[in-house]
Image 1 (cartoon, rainbow, N blue to C red):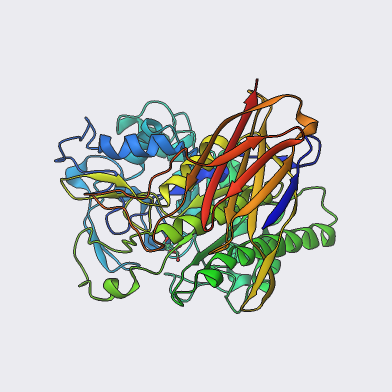
Image 2 (tube, helix red, strand yellow; image 1 turned 30 degrees about the vertical axis):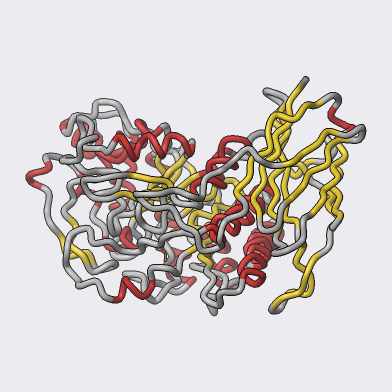
Amino acid sequence: MYASMKLRKDHQIGAIDNRIYGSFIEHLGRAVYGGIYEPDHPTADDMGFRQDVLDLVRQLQVPIVRYPGGNFVSGYCWEDGTGPKDQRPRRLELAWKVIETNQVGIDEFQEWAKRAGSQVMMAVNLGTRGPEEARNLVEYCNFPGGTLYSDKRRANGFEEPFNIKTWCLGNEMDGPWQIGAKTAEEYGRIAAETAKVMKWVDPTIELVACGSSNLGMPTFGSWETTVLEHTYDYVDYISLHNYYGNPENDIRLFLSKSLDFDSFIKSVAAICDAVKAKKHSDKTLYLSFDEWNVWYHSNEQDKAIEPWSVAPPQLEDVYNFEDALFVGCLLITLLKNADRVKMACLAQLVNVIAPIMTENGGAAWAQTIFYPFLHASAYGRGISLCPEVTCEGYSVGDKSFVPFVESAASWNPDDETLTIFAVNRSEDAVQQLAVSLEDFGPLTLIEHLTLQGHDLKAVNTAKSSPVVPKTDGETKMTNEGAEITLQPLSWNVIRFGRK
Ligand code: AHR
């Protein structure tokens, strides 16, 4: 099949905020204990952080990591995770029915984030707690000294403030599963009051209000409207969360679900703008898609986990090749919405629905979804261009047209590199993509990376990793630009630079 793409340097969606390549570490399962932190592991550093995991995280170049939850945060006492470790309480953790030992808290996590080359995106508890504890936490983290909480931090060995710039006002507060769930009115009020005092302690911070827990929530839309009517003047972002799966075992349907991700983003942006207009505000609200991924493989095995153990193997989805293709489609969609989505977190980072897996005391390895994320984070920087694509498509489920070619392009003015990301959704047809690049001056092909040719259910494990990228893509330079061959069911990264 033939497809075409026109790219122009001045036809731009917007600047890519690097924080769209964020991720998430929750106190859940083995994300923290046995994931990033395992003092007895052969690779543990002076603070007990696994260096093998840190090496993989650094490869992903994750600019921001959300912490400590998630559902966990709605019952969390942040003070438990500070000060001498032998005095920290063991608590019943109600969100995930486990015992939390508090051997890692903000004292340790901010240090881990530094070692990973990331910033912390800190969430406050608006389930069981409120403005008082949130403002104390901002004081503990960001105030230089000479006050109760800033001096506690200094006494705990951290003379310099942590300077955490991005904060989430609770987590999924619309969800009945949430500890201290709220109506939109209840949440809107407490979020506004919490935002006010947090910014009074540190006016430089940015705040994220909770949007709906997912697109399927019955209150989706009205929740955002009500929450923003209360919080618009005090917050900078609203959150979106959504997880996907292929329980139908239908690849055409599965890969079409990134169109829902796209329309979710556009709907929330429209609601933000409607509230902006109603408030006669000059401020544009941006989106933080701070939980997204595939999550369904581990649902059954999680039902068998006995409650009240420490760091059991929860939400340990083992990702296959089709998940990598789908995650590629979602990353492309984030790039195509770079004008509104300024932050996004692949949920999560280690062991829990994660690109990185570990064995306690053993190996760490990259799952299939690690690679599209790695490529997008490494090369999808600079400006997101607006590709004009013509291609054939198919209909499936409630969608009358799903394009076979899902694509985005980024232009990095710093090093004058151009990158095209493309997924071919077709199971059997090669797409011959003719790209016009005349607007860019002389370019040369650097490489055409692919994930292709695997069984859809192929997975990577501690022992073998068949699903890894290769530089075996076929791209030819032409007079007009390039002729790119997209193999059936493939992830493609085509990189061009100056001659
Ligand atoms: O990421 C796993 C869980 O999914 C988070 O704790 C929660 O916010 C969401 O429902």
